Image (tube, rainbow, N blue to C red; front, side, top):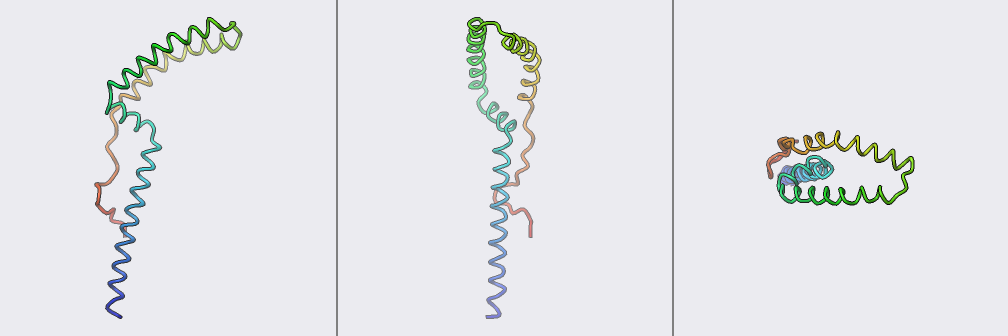
Length: 120
């Protein structure tokens, strides 16, 4: 019985280490899923043509729909304000958005798969 105790402790320590590793991986996956800028960069980098076509289609649709909405609506004070704000903000925001999306993704902070973290 005295010989069994250290073996059982070693087994429990190995299970604890494996559980800690699984939990750390789950936390890293969750952090990655909430990091929207990083996910957007990865998606655009993996399928650049698809997102270029989406941008073209969205721009074409917006260039047809937005003016039509403003022509159909009576020019109220709020509509004039929104139109003025859009005309001012969109040209200013476009370079910033493009610059943020074109930044290279940072090196991954995830450890190599299957390697324990060294936590005891």
